[in-house]
Image (tube, rainbow, N blue to C red; front, side, top):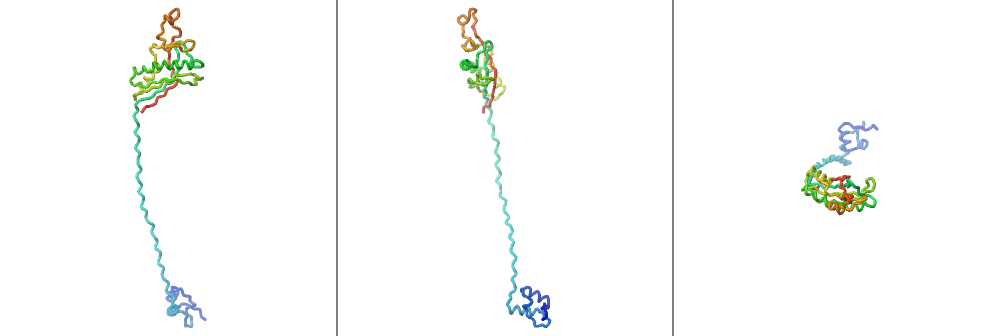
Length: 231
């Protein structure tokens, strides 16, 4: 038998559209040619439907997301600094006898510290007569290593004025508390025996020459100071 072939491109195209096999399509021609009519007749006999064209799938466009509105950040207002009303002062001092030394260590330390606290508690408040801004004076004692264990006196007071020159003035008054030399003390063998030595009577408390033994003034050596603003 001759090999089957399509007689025309039209016949070939129709067969391909219906997905027909060339050998299944009958032909009566001696040369084995398949005509367009042969293809149509075979389609009617076999009822081969025309393949449906597949609709192209719709490509969904990505939804546009609305940009989220960002809430504006709250700008924190800088905190207003409270005005300085004044300063708190702390002075750590080492009292020293100018003529007669008193012990601030060993067995006489506690006794002499107590006597000095009483002494300064009488004098420190008097600074308020020289400075209206000098307030809240306090006197206490402490023990430090300097370089060995030794007792010291601590002054605390307020200067209620925002003026460092006034602060320095009050510190000078505190560290030179008996500048006029009117408040001597009496020291015997390193022990403070009287903090009101100005009241002693040379005739009664003095020696044969009317000299009162152990009279001395006190100077204040500043070991440490701190100044803190008050709001």
